[in-house]
Length: 183
Image 1 (spheres, rainbow, N blue to C red):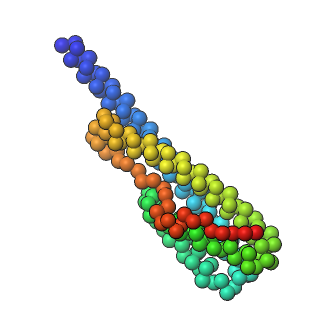
Image 2: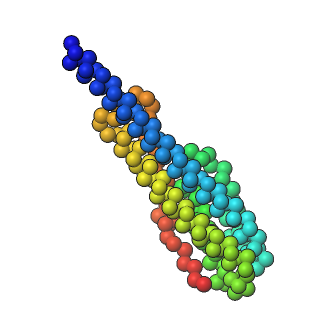
Image 3: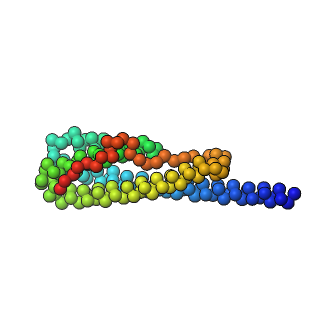
């Protein structure tokens, strides 16, 4: 009788331990996604200033500039929780930003402009921070996904509605190409 009661208590304690681990992993993934979201917002806030600076020098590049603004607005309109769609939209935006930065090669006055140089530097720093935040998020998502799929924690995860997280990644291979920017 005591053995059965002991086994039941151990199973309950184990389920509590697994549940708490799943909650911790889910919170880490949510915190990591929030970090990416903050960095993407900071980048989006820089874009209008960059566009205005470039407009004065490259008026006939209007199509490229409008594309960046359109992609920025599209990326910001995607719900924060839609990781896959946000990754795709941000990949397209990053490629378009690369084309805007490449315009400086064709416009030496733009390349020498102090505002443009500062914005370019800020954008490069931002891209680095986004990359670090993306790695952190993907690691947190991986940890949660392993717990959700591994036996026996998958039994607890299924009972309490824990689900896998999408990774924040670029799905279009063309978006992975680094734009050639020479200064």
